Image (cartoon, rainbow, N blue to C red; front, side, top):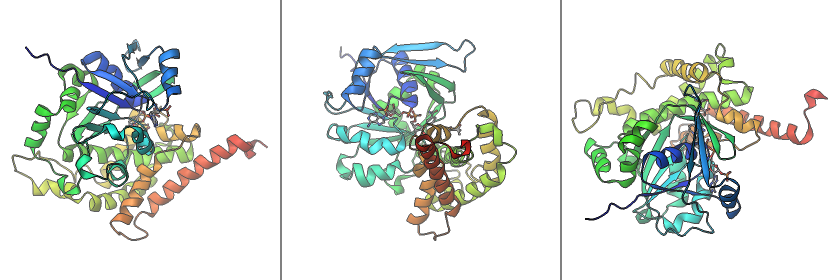
Length: 379
Ligand SMILES: NC(=O)C1=CN([C@@H]2O[C@H](COP(=O)(O)OP(=O)(O)OC[C@H]3O[C@@H](n4cnc5c(N)ncnc54)[C@H](OP(=O)(O)O)[C@@H]3O)[C@@H](O)[C@H]2O)C=CC1
Ligand SMILES: CC(C)(CO)C(=O)C(=O)O
């Protein structure tokens, strides 16, 4: 009798998202979960000071239980010895992806399953143009759109503030593969080890994992992208908690969303044409796009999700500017500017998002200057 091989999944980016995923993978699957740290120093800190343990405090449960797991194996570039990587999760910030991948590229080939679990858009272009340039060596690529809310409590303990699930789909390397058949989705579900692992019954239920076609996931990804294009930069620029601005934010959200949708309709034309083109075609999932991705509906949804459901949350981008960390603005509003240029939509086509990006960088620069030179308002 052949014994089923134990799946191995490497996690590059053991922060908020990496930890919340790793804990449930360890608890609810038989996978060997191997975090990849950026240096021997960080690895030693995890193994010696942290005793190779990771923890999640489930704030959304009444008793706010702390769930702790022991990590069997962890690596860094200096110690890595696993050979070709079977399954790789990328949960670094978007702008950290290329540098984080660099030491492991020789261990990634066309048999590797690689999933991006990140906000924003634009990392795919970096992978295509700067990282996996040799098409024959490109890994099997997947995208996760995660809606769980998690932040660092201390050390390797993270607080799981909001439970909201995750969507996963095969991410096409080429724009002409954007629309996927139901049979392709079923084939991945049946044959791909990473999809099998993420969709294993207990884990998928506990983590809220949904496997779908790229076009379905893209609809959700663009929805979340518009939420992030509004909430993240505006809360950072004005330095407010999400819900404080609920009565005053609609006009600026309308300006941001209107411009974003004009650009996204060009860049993701197959998705916006999908509803009519594939209606009634049984090998394609039916989608309603226009009734969701329109300005007035999205203004209401962004306010509902950002300022109501997450009213007491400080957005991740505001947190980055307060802690003087780089932000992901280039993969959120900045990416809209890039798309407008790529599709030659004219210099003014992304002026709102360009200005929003500039204001976020102004806010971050001002916070950094105040930290170094003092706050003139107090002088
Ligand atoms: N936090 C949340 O609630 C949500 C986050 N997201 C998105 O998920 C993505 C990840 O965010 P989040 O988990 O919050 O970010 P974190 O900053 O918490 O985690 C990123 C992790 O990546 C590690 N890392 C960075 N560079 C390297 C490297 N070269 N090698 C190894 N590890 C590295 C960092 O470690 P180090 O200490 O070494 O820098 C850090 O632990 C982002 O795109 C974010 O927008 C999406 C939904 C919700
Ligand atoms: C929805 C929102 C804005 C919640 O704060 C978020 O996703 C973030 O902070 O990154």
